[in-house]
Picture (cartoon, rainbow, N blue to C red):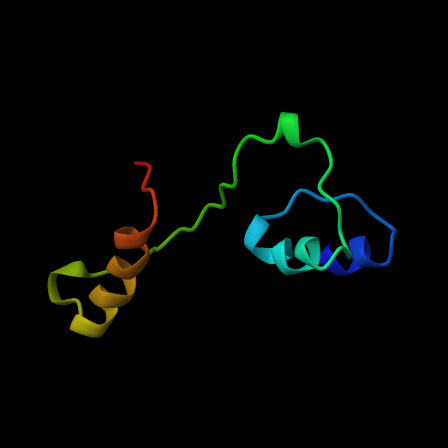
Length: 72
């Protein structure tokens, strides 16, 4: 979607972190900002057998939760 927008072929609703460098450089222009519901992108972590979860897997799952807003 970002590439189509850069070519002038599309409007898109994407996370700001995907396009902020393009906005800063003037390649893209935000539109409809008053209707922006905030920059939310869902991430799902699904795993099985958490009784014996490897420490590196637990760290991978915990990492985003420590840095992002979590909704249950």
